[in-house]
Image 1 (tube, protein in one colour):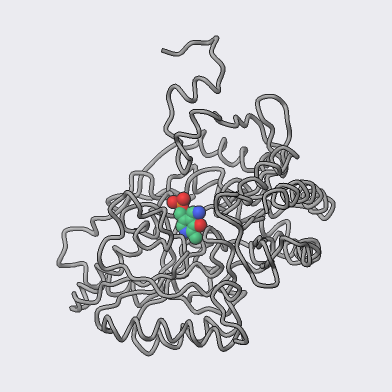
Image 2 (image 1 turned 180 degrees about the vertical axis):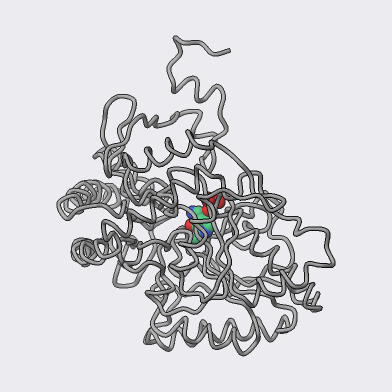
Length: 458
Ligand code: PMP
């Protein structure tokens, strides 16, 4: 029963199962209740303000108080608050958004399909590719390859693609048809004396062997999040994607760029596919598509996929895939306004410009006695801790230095994310240089306390 006298913290524990949360621990600690947003800050129920150093879940590009997005939503709510797109129905915002997206991506003459989340859209693309391969008379070409430590979602299929054990353990996953190749993490996987190019060659070789082992004729697609984010901020090493794309072409395997985090300026260009000169057959986007103000995701697919889909669909009653909220008019109107704002305010150029300052500031932690590696591109960065940077030794897992540091950051008014002993920074794209300084000043305080703790327990 809802009891107005109970605190929100109690009511939370009383009623909720939280996603991606240590549930037993949560019963002891309770939630952090966020009530308001202000630019790059969020404010909790007690009035404490935090810099959102991860833009929520790597997503809130325009910050937490953009009035133009609220206005776009209100306007569409007035005109038509909801409608669907089944049976050929459409609304103006979804048509306009699809056209804008199609013109933005580095895929020529693409077609757009809408869903509501990153998981849904990556799952959708698997179904599109399987369906197309059935139409093309190659029903055996269905396997999907991803990289270790990649993140693609949590549905049964996309969790199977995700290369993180926590997404499989206890869930009876991965399903069959899903295979992994090496994670291109030069710092952790590179051999002593191996150059970045040599390392990329070894990663490519690993992919080549997997394709040979499974048989190219059975593999439909390779998915990559161009910069692995959730798996520990891993930008591609030099020469990696050139080699990978060559192998995929030789073996007629489709390339899907999962730009759910990288899309819309995160790496300094509109898409990571632009930054890293990729020629994907499909790009999936979500998160910053609407600055995360409303749920919406999209796949932009090349003619190699949509042409057979349309011409071959005669034999089916309908293309029987879609969600009640595919292209929801209010989400689409907010996404459209978001993309306009990116252009009007030159947000991607802003990322390039403040990205230099971000780079300088994050690089300044090199040489700290517990910093092993620093990886970054645009406004996305990761700091990996090491108990002995000279040997890259890892801290004792029981010390939990990463989560200790992230808790200390929170005490100092900074929300960031730790993945084990890797700390990720992914602030809203609107962040200014003084705000970047303040973010790293707060981190520095937390780092000093973490180092004290680590030394005391050495
Ligand atoms: N792909 C990537 C690269 C992601 O980072 C995420 C989520 N962080 C997803 C897919 C899944 O998105 P969602 O949580 O919206 O399902």
